[in-house]
Structures are given as structure tokens and as C-alpha cells.
Image (cartoon, rainbow, N blue to C red; front, side):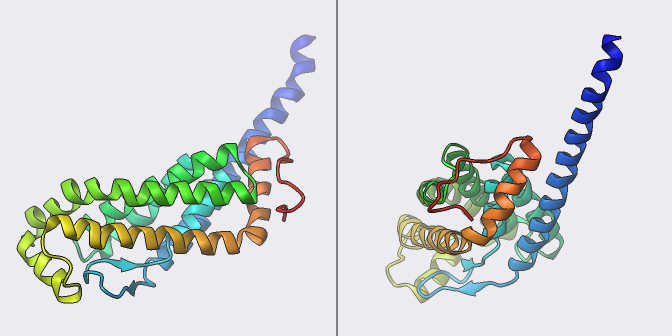
Length: 229
């Protein structure tokens, strides 16, 4: 008798979990496709080495981290770069760097947003993510990306510094390359992506809160009156 009475509840739970899974996969697929397309909208920046080009692909990834959680944001980041891998001009090094730095940015931002999922909380989350991106990108590029360019592509440090110095005379060695090029580039990237995401937060927050409600099975009621979409 108890089994029979509990069966509908178990079935309802199973249906809810299946619905949540389908919704996660659907949102992930849509945001991954958007991120992949945006990877091709590359913009060279003044005084930056030619191999550093800004794109807007982290915006849908960041939205995914807010809507689904930091782990799913990292999944979208991974899928975006895996899909782009066959079209790589850097033998996958650029995609690896993009994945590591992008995962750091959206992962940290998503973790903070888990605790502060309001519009103000989103701003705080993205600010923390931007700082983490600019700081951690230094050792990542120093010990992973730049050495790989030399090992895999035979692109020596001298060649990298030469190309970089042509557009920015302040770049004279590896240290100045890291702190005059990579740090400002990642700060700029984090700030611009965060600003655009914050600007579109109000309409996008409908997706964020609806997704949180569906995938977690609870209504998200933490958004204050001033920030709720």
C-alpha cells in the first residue's frame, strides 16, 4: 500500500529531473552555439600583440554560468573551444588558453553569483571574476601558453617579443609582455564582457531565473524589487 501511494511522487520526481536535464542540455546547446559564432567576431586592440584579439564569446558563457551554475558555464566554455578546434590557426594552443582563462573567469563569477544572485550580486561576481582572470592569466601565459607556442609551433620568445614590440615599444622582454600586454588585455576583456552582460542582465535575467527554477525545482525569489526582470 505504501509503495503504491509513493509511486506517483516518485514518478513526479523522475519527470521533474528529466525536465530539468532536458532544459539544461537545451540551454547549454543554445549558449554554446552563440559562443562559437561570437568567437569569429574578433577585434584587434591598439598596442596589443597581433596574436591577442578580443571577441565577445564569453558573454553567453557567462550567462550560462549565471543561469545553470559555474560547472555548466565551464562545460559551455569547453564545448565552445572543442567545436572551434578544427578551425584553429594555433594548433589548439589558442583554444587551450581560451578555455583555461575563460573557465577561470566564468567559474569564479558563477561561484560568487551562487551566493549573490541579484543584479548587484552579478556586478560583484563579474568584478571578482575579472580580477581573477587578469591575475591568474599571468602564470598561465608565462608557464603554459607561451612555452607551448615555442614547443609546438616553433614560435620563439624572440619572435613573439619582436612582433609585440612593433605595436607596443614598452614591451621589451617576457615580464613586460606579461604585464604590459596580457594583464591589460584580460582586464579589458573582463570589463567589456561584464559591462555588456550587466547591460543585458534585465532581459536575460528572465532566462536565468526561469532556468534556476526549472533545474533546481524551486522558485527563485531572491531578486530584489530594484533588480528583478
